[in-house]
Length: 336
Ligand code: KG4
Ligand code: ZN
Image 1 (cartoon, rainbow, N blue to C red):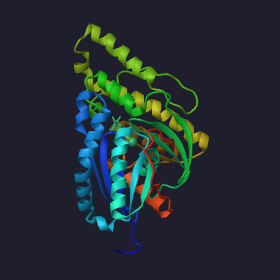
Image 2 (cartoon, helix red, strand yellow):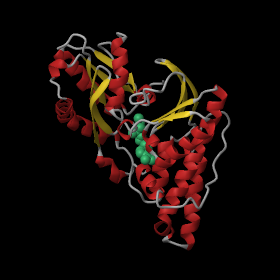
Image 3 (cartoon, helix red, strand yellow):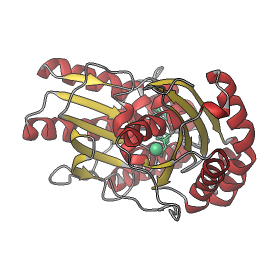
Image 4 (tube, rainbow, N blue to C red):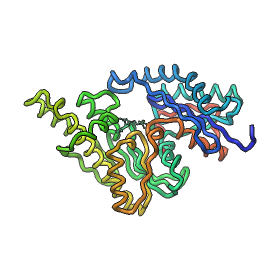
């Protein structure tokens, strides 16, 4: 092995996606994601099933990941693993695997905050994004507006007071009878619909978000319409999806605009599963061009939960000699 070559394995198991990635000298060589289909029929993630499915996936995923990257395990210099936040059972599986592998290969372990990894997922492919920037992280568990001044230098400007943006998609999608997670399906169906209805939303001060008022208004609207037309959802599915998506996007971009102006920033990064949404991408690109800002989105493989972003942050920490303690345990809550 070339002594200057640094090769890390990244492991992500915080929720319901098992993922491993290999990064070599800052370049991601493989980023594999096994999504757990089992939760679809339950309408949400069942934590015990998530842990079992992670455990089932670990060894085959590891083999496939090394093979795709074209490396042997002896070439690994270290392992980066998600410490939290996330589901405790799921995190334990990834961390247990990481610890055992680190011990057997005699290589160090680096712990990574999942939220920090989302923030930097924007930088994996955007070489023209520089500090400081505003990061909108929108996932199934989090909605955050963060000022990023450097690695480890974050100011949390706003967050959600109730549901996350992804949950707003998933829960309203469930009301429409869509499978979990409904976000990608709403996005697909909305493309052929028209936003015919604007759902009322709760107005929250500052840079914080709230989706509970919106969720309730979707519920009441559907209940009312279904009373007179039992086929209302089926007959209007595309338009309903477009209306839901439009309202969520409107809620999100309002605070982005305020925060960009307040912080006097001209670069915006968007991360997390909901950053894959085509309506959000379109709206933010328009907003950016109106204000002469630049906006940066990760490619789809780095939007939803993935080990590539864990390996990316782990790589920086490894270079800085920030290794994990032998007794490290996962953290279900792990603030940025
Ligand atoms: O980042 P992520 O994979 O996991 C968490 O850390 O939560 O985000 C998952 C969330 C789900 O709520 C899913 O519905 C949403 O991201 N999502 C989308 C799209 N793709 C994924 N929401 C709207 N449009 C999409 N295209
Ligand atoms: Zn995530």
